[in-house]
Amino acid sequence: MKRFAFSQMDVFTGRPGLGNPLAVVHGAVGLSDAEMRRFANWTNLSETSFLLPPDQDGADYKVRIFTPKAELPFAGHPTLGSCHAWLAAGSAPKGDWIVQQCGAGLVRIKRDGARLAFAAPGAVQGDVTAALKARIAAVLGVPEAELLALRQLSERAPCWTGVMLKDRQTLLALKPDFTAMGELEIGVVAPIPGGETDFEVRGFAGDVGGEDPVTGSLNAGLARWLIPAGRAPARYVAAQGTALGRAGRVFVDHDGRDFWIGGESVEVVSGTLTL
Image (cartoon, rainbow, N blue to C red; front, side, top):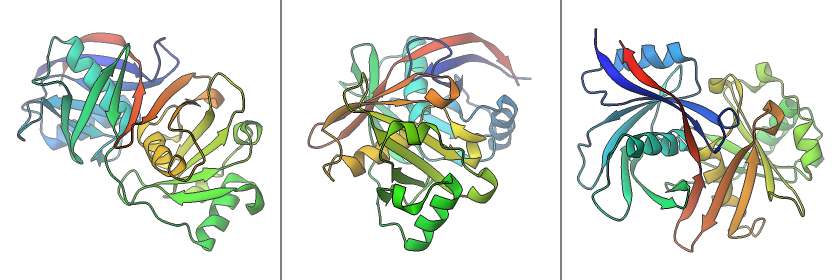
């Protein structure tokens, strides 16, 4: 039996119960890949992260991120939640940035008031074929004409396809066919004119059990698409999780070089884990 410090975070919210939960295992040295996978499967959360000492120059810590089914090279809410937990445990960065090592390489994280924000890793985006557009329309249960724009947001896991709808009402009414969706990961966005937030987002993927409450990697991909395309301003706030009774808030800022994806995190559970 091995004992580890444990945190359960709620990410992209400052109020427990309104964001996306994340399990964090501190000091996970000595855990095998199989043990990490088994525990992540047991938590049944969309992601579980394991904090480790870095083995790459320039990194402050290393994180491994698992869904109940597989390991991910990068994910947004585990990045912010893990960093918050690492800092709350008394750790401090070596320099001005906090630098996270993960499967996607080194990721810079900065403090932004009560929030943390990560510089979104680069991603190769691409066009969506007519066949995929037709399939997505069928999965979402809307006419193809209601899909105003589509973009393949990343070529590596998580492989989100971005879809823009005309309004928030249409987005919140979506009832996807998850059986037909199969391996697809679909992120849907719609503008909110004159609201507290600028966009509403929903993320659908089988690996997270259907719909993800709040998704950092999806919002990073959407920012890389919408801002250069002139569909979003350089700074905006996205709401996500509304359809699930959550109130996630994602703060996006493009400073000309980086796409920063930020949000608050709050610790909900802390204690000792025995594995």
